Length: 163
Ligand SMILES: CC(C)(COP(=O)(O)OP(=O)(O)OC[C@H]1O[C@@H](n2cnc3c(N)ncnc32)[C@H](O)[C@@H]1OP(=O)(O)O)[C@@H](O)C(=O)NCCC(=O)NCCS
Image 1 (cartoon, rainbow, N blue to C red):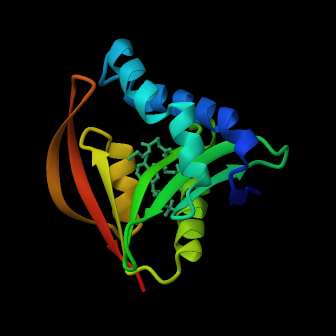
Image 2 (spheres, rainbow, N blue to C red):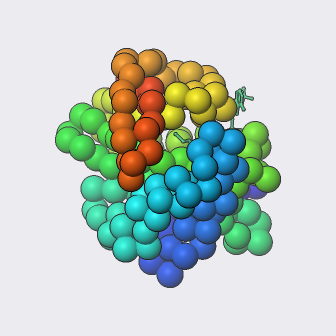
């Protein structure tokens, strides 16, 4: 039903739109509109997304529906021979709960089939994503206090053993 492929450079704008929409939907109830704008303008800057899409150590892929519309995004970086770090996984709210997140995650593990562990950090209040990661076999290995653009974030560090 959904196809996964590495993102083309001319799809960055569409990917950014999915990220903005999903970010607002996910964090709108926790952070002010100003804070969301500040964080997303840094994390989802077109220049940064383009750089990641061109980076050979990064798997930046999109899930598309049958009309070829992007419904989800994943970005995973190879940190070293054993370790992967997931920068983001975002599925358009209209398509959540339909297996898109699972397909994106599986595709990244297939792409980096030699890796031994996958780490990520998730906002503590984001119960939906935390439930998804636990369901997918991730374990909580720590917590962090971060500040991004003057906005305080409490994050949970997850890790999944691979192979
Ligand atoms: C988290 C997210 C990526 C999951 O993607 P998804 O396509 O909705 O997830 P899937 O349909 O593949 O679900 C996989 C499993 O996770 C579990 N899961 C997904 N959403 C859940 C929820 N809201 N509550 C509890 N469990 C959930 C399901 O039980 C499902 O298991 P099942 O196959 O046995 O039913 C997606 O909901 C999302 O984009 N959320 C907003 C953005 C976000 O928070 N990203 C992560 C930032 S760290």
